[in-house]
Length: 307
Image 1 (cartoon, helix red, strand yellow):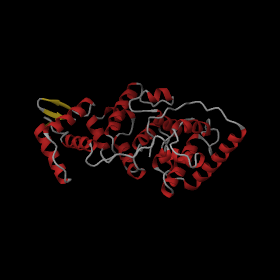
Image 2 (tube, one colour; image 1 turned 30 degrees about the horizontal axis):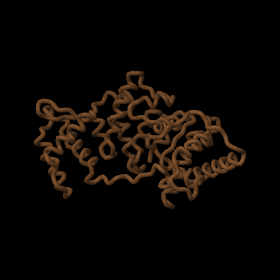
Image 3 (cartoon, rainbow, N blue to C red; image 1 turned 135 degrees about the horizontal axis):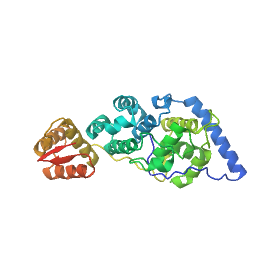
Image 4 (cartoon, rainbow, N blue to C red; image 1 turned 45 degrees about the vertical axis):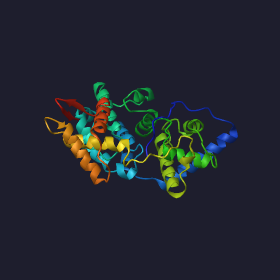
């Protein structure tokens, strides 16, 4: 899983503590690097240092299982191999390719950010401030790009990384705030890539792989974070209705005249019926369409709707 972007990151190393604390962190780092070597996962996006390719992987991995992303990441790059190709693609094509990965706003943000980057030369920056200025790029995604594409010091705190810190350094504690974890993440990340066996890229891969192992073998340590929340049920939720409506619109994206409101209602009713749910009212459909239109997913003209 990749990071939630609600985290504030810093670029400088946190100040060192007392000698005993430094020894504890040195032992922690040795343990993590050893476990990282033992548990290393040869994932496809780890075989590149291309900032665009890593950016796409980081966004796809947010709250999405690695097994779902493997295959979809490669297919995305075949269809949109560069920043320029993504920027030039119709938004409907980008949303269509994203289907099944959840949270369609991410795809729209990727498209918008690619447009910004294309106008500036098509190159992702390595500077945190410039990265987080892009649509949809928060501090954690910026940290992932910095670490994995540029091998630069970063504060990359996602669920697997958090699991390792909570398991090893906050054993037995509950409701641990990220404010206590972030300085340790910063302090333990190498300052640069001078040691290829212990650089920012290697360090975070080790944390990710050890964290994934912990979550498979013991109760998830991340649940002891003060920010942990259970993901709400998708089926039957407002999110599910929005996603379903977008799929209906995408199914008609090639229709020159768009799709009528009546057809949208009919197709949604059919989908809801097959799922054993009651059909949406016309009012509910209008509310959903208005939401999607405000967010840039679709538009209405001449009595029809199109992506």
